[in-house]
Image 1 (cartoon, rainbow, N blue to C red):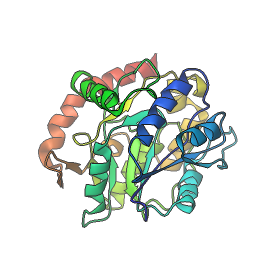
Image 2 (cartoon, rainbow, N blue to C red):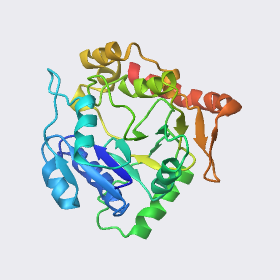
Image 3 (cartoon, rainbow, N blue to C red):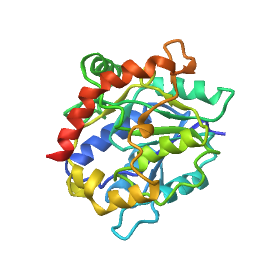
Amino acid sequence: MTQLCLFSIPKPFRGASERLQQNALDSWRRLGSRVEVVLLGGEAGVAEAAREFGFLHCPKLSCNAQGTPLISDAWNTVRQATNARQFLYTNADILFEQNLLTAAEVLDSWPANRYLAIGQRIESDLGEDVRGWSNEQLQDWIRRQRREREKASVVCKDYFLFPRHLFLDVPDFAVGRGNWDNWMVYHAHRSGIPVVDLTRAVVALHQPHDHRHSGGRRQAYVVGDEARENQRLAGGRHLLVGSHASHFLNDQGQVVPMGWRWVPRALGDVPRFVNLLRTLIR
């Protein structure tokens, strides 16, 4: 049985999105044979990218009236496509390095076997196609970004790691729109599932992009019809509870309770959160 299945629903491979997504997919391929990658949906260029990188492609996904793929069908489709013990959903512009596998192995052997793992991203644009880079070049660049770049706010969640027996009944959220990511964390807390912060252990690099495909960031996340429908399905925005971890993976590779550590973490996140709000109200 495969340990980890990484899956995503890419945007069309056009314009700037093509390079950003190819960079991300290249980093996923470098994770090696222990990771099975599944690309979902039938957007332009997805089938070709799956062939280029040797990934499984599942083109058919249920969509809402606006043609946006549904999270519920993505979860169901990937369960039918693989027998992996763990699932990692990620946005298709996120680069990972090998420490993702170490963190996944720790959680896979964690006696609780019930968890939802999330982590803060680092904003950084490579500015070029990295498919010709060596592993050493890419890893050195990622480590440098980790030292030099600021993390995004904790409310920005770009990946979710969980065992296959959890999240079996997810509402029909529209992907890439607001509020469904907060629901994932809120639902975990409400269900007694530990939420594990992987920020210390996992480097997740997000390549900045615009939101023209969804009418703009504010439209996609706050005021648009799809964002509001996601909010209705989620039973609210759950902004605070939906961004808070109960545990974290420490530097010794142990999952430990967050405890009082959430206080300085929350205070330190205030400037990042304020900057995020500014981008949403422009």
